[in-house]
Length: 513
Image (cartoon, rainbow, N blue to C red; front, side):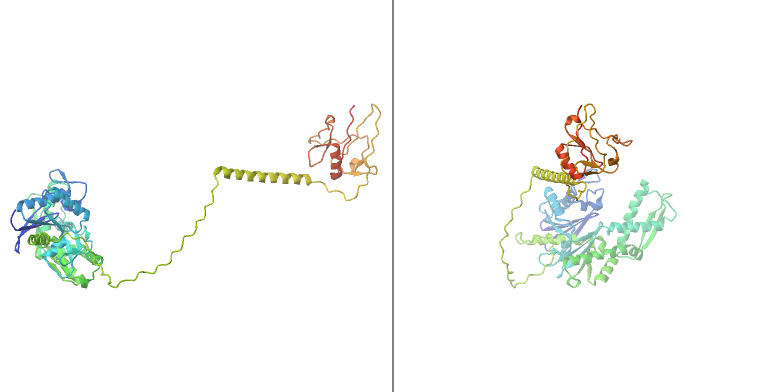
């Protein structure tokens, strides 16, 4: 371990920056190298920290993203042997992601490494007296955070991030523009291994040209054309052409700054300035757009990609200079600005009198299924009985209207007995014929029935109609007929009563020979 050496390190998707400094010395030494081992999807492995699914490395083995970051930090610590180490992590990491990285460092034996958000580390390299907006444009996206100043800097709101506005996307736009101006009518197969390798090298040269145009106004990009070996064409690219490609995505990133200020509860007048970090912070067009939109001072370091690592080294130096008991924690979470409460005590609100609860009414007992079935059955029986009685009453009261003339008839005289061997039954009037009571009290038929002589045969039934049933002598009863009713057996006494009511003829009981 080197006495008094402080190490600040930031692990990026495309490059790892380690900065060392001695206690009390402003001189810093920068060490850069790509993350080892480089994963197959190196551009997004930082977003995989905390993911339970491992990632695949270049040698074919799988490893958790948090363990990969811990391995990179452990390699820098092993090479430089610092007395104190502070590592910066992306501001858009969640608490779960930070905890997962902390556990990975502990497993790797790096429990002494302090983790801080990169915006707080970057602000240590550029002190300020008012809150600062930290605009970080890296290879995998842009993030915006508002940092409060003071003895313990903290994030005033959750940082915002947009992965669609990134340095890698700018490199791709530049390469497409170069290919469109170099190939002309030449065609190539992008799946050819040789062409694929050349496209990868061309993208790296376009990235270098983008960085060169941050300080220069023109640059050239060599392009190897398909065809005979050695065919190379230099494409001239000026800053104005590059800015035309990047103006639209950079303009869209300004909405993140507006939203970050709104979430922090700050106006433009309350902000001290905008600090640019990350590899894309050196683009001149970005400084122009931010200054025009917000009217705030925009600060940037000569190499903004190293700003966070330099600030982390200064924080590690501060921890060496302070006793452990006085060292304040660095990884402060967002603490939004909240107005201080008024010191004037507020009187308690008046309480309304509490009324006693109303007595609960007992709920009516619900009938069971068999009880409901019994009630329904009884109601049906009552309705059926009433209906049957009404029909019976209506049937018994239907009759022919009685004559209003008083009846002065006397009891019928007994009929004469015919001579032996010549007995003939009394002839009943025809069915449906009207009858009257004569002076003797005997019932006499009227109409056609009265005109027939005594000895004439009884009328027969009409064709196609059933003949009326003859009386049954053995039954001891007589039969009364009507056109509207069937034959009804009646006794003699009831027959007389019925005959007096409905004026039906009552035949004499035939004699049995």
